[in-house]
Structures are given as C-alpha cells and as structure tokens.
Image (cartoon, rainbow, N blue to C red):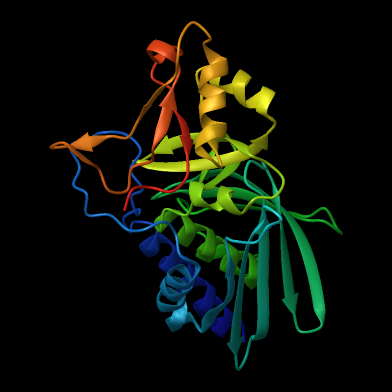
Length: 286
C-alpha cells in the first residue's frame, strides 16, 4: 500500500508543478501592448472541467466549484477513489481578503479540519502551512522543494488541496496578496454583505479582496489603492469623495478608438489624484 500511496502523491505533486505553468486567463484592467485574445470571467463549469481534465490521471475528480454563492465564500471540493487508498474528499472554503481559510478532509468515516495560511501562490511556487485544528500539528508545504521523500507524512487531502489551489491560480481565478486571498472581480457582484472591495491588478486581471464600507473604501482609495464597487454610481461616489476639488473622470481603456474587450469601466478621482488609481465596477467589456 505504501508504494501505491507514494506513487499516487508523487505523481500528483508533479501534476501540480505542470499545471502551475499554464497561462493565466486575462481580464484586462489597464492599457498594454498585449493582445485582446482573452477569456471571459471565470466560469465555474469551465474551471471544474479544467480541474477534472488535469487530475483525471490521478483518480481525482472535482465535485463542486462555487464562485457564485451569496455568502462571499469560494468553495472547491475534490475527491479521489483508489482501490488501495480508498475514498478521500477535500473541501476548502475561502473568503476574499482572508489571510487564512479552512480545509475539511474526509478519509473513510474520519473528518479532519485544517487551518491554511498561504504565503505564496504563483506560477512556480506554492507555499503555506496546513495546521490540524484538533492536534495542532502543522504541515509545511513548498512546491519548490522535493516532497516525494516524505510523502508518507502528507495526508492525501492536503496534496489534493494544493493541486486545486494551483489550478485556481493557473486559470486566473485567485491570487495571494500579502498573505490574503484575492479572487476575480465578478465574484463581488453576488455579494449581499458589501458594496465595495479592496482591489488589485495583476497580470492584467482585476481581483478583489476584503469587503469594505463606503467610508473605508474612500480611505483605501485615498491611500493610493484600487477599489471595486458593485455598481457604477457606487464606484463614482468613491472616486468623487476621494478628491472633492472637481468631478471624477469616467473611462475604459481603448484601442483604435474602440473600447477594449475584457477591460473594466472605472472612475478616476479629479485630475487622477490619488495618482492613477481606479474605482472599478461592473463586468468587463465584451
């Protein structure tokens, strides 16, 4: 059984590294020389299909991908069934802006909960700590180091979760900023808790973090950070309040006189002060 287990986890770790170099889908935010050959905002079905395709050889399937629930929680659930290893399920739930999240791993009739803190998630690095909530035992994962030598010490569900997290980055669905999770901006449109969110632009894509009140959104914008709001008027209010010397400026990036597909409409404060920061809203141009 151990040889089977070792092979299973070793192959899965290799799959993580292969998947991590896939291109990120682009949801453009600012003008650049890159082409407009982009994908639409993340679609749960497409993401689930991509995950299933990548993990099929390891007998892993994705049972749920939910980026649209109204509780501001992103949920991913995976499962593997192997004749010798048995059934293992791993489900993790992430709230945008959180610096830690929960993973629930079920092996047979035993369910374990882990607290996860990711320090880095990129095209070639996955680093973080998985801590057993009950025992306090911590697994330190780093995809840049050889892990096959201690695969016996890593629960299968943790490795499955690492694979899913890498896949989320590869599809452009999630990034880590200063230890906090940021997800694609269209997730915010489903929120019932907040109208404004911390925002950041990476690789041409707009991501949202923690939700904020209007006053905090204005303060965040004034401190030279981007903001995403769920409507045009609410985004305008943030930009207007950030600089009351004049009217805010409304635009979307253009190319050859046409609105650029995949770019978000946004507001700038009067005379673009704070310097060139964006108050994004809505969906990208189609």
